[in-house]
Image 1 (cartoon, rainbow, N blue to C red):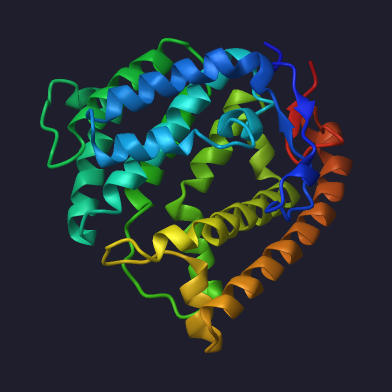
Image 2 (image 1 turned 90 degrees about the horizontal axis):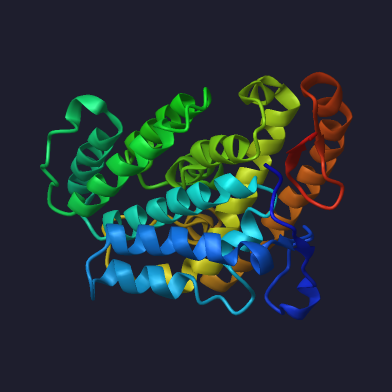
Length: 306
């Protein structure tokens, strides 16, 4: 199925937007699908009045537009709802786990992962914090399996790996180079890439191409560091035994102030975007010939020929 219609967004009207990447939104046509997915996930995974429910509801009050309409405009229309459910689910998982001590978070992740295995379908143990999320993920796994898509098992396997690894390192990072691989793992980037391929009906073998993998890596760095840039003001005040943000890493690595570190982070992001544009040109020259996919000229993602 084709994606929902989408339109280019005039980012000049967003004063805080410093990226050179163009943005599209499918919100106009896709909002009912997105909103239903969000309602199912938020109210299926969180308790009334809970901190994580309030954070989830606040997450979707962006005056610049709907998060999923802006981020996944080229996903096929019949799969966009699943993208919304899975990404929002992971956001809620993150909100819950970051409030737990590291050791407890590892245990809760292990309990949550049981929902991805049929052998645990009769196990109702929900741990300290993941009972509702475990039930929701189990039902979502069954729903995805019923689609009979040959790529779905790989999608679920990648999700399982991501839940296993996303919060498995409590090290204090000394340099940005040490931090970046962890950052990509921590925000489930490999799974998100697999999810986008699945939702756009792109063959998984695309990732076998070294240029595509380099491009995806660079985009992952940009996404992770951009999230750090905009979330630091909130994260710096959170009570936690592990701060995961590039700003304090840069402060430590270069012995600089917080203001200087944030400015440096912005310049690093801009530099990575330049690298991504160069890689995109190489990808555009290869993907259609090798994999039967092409890049849409005014976006940074792949779209399958239909």
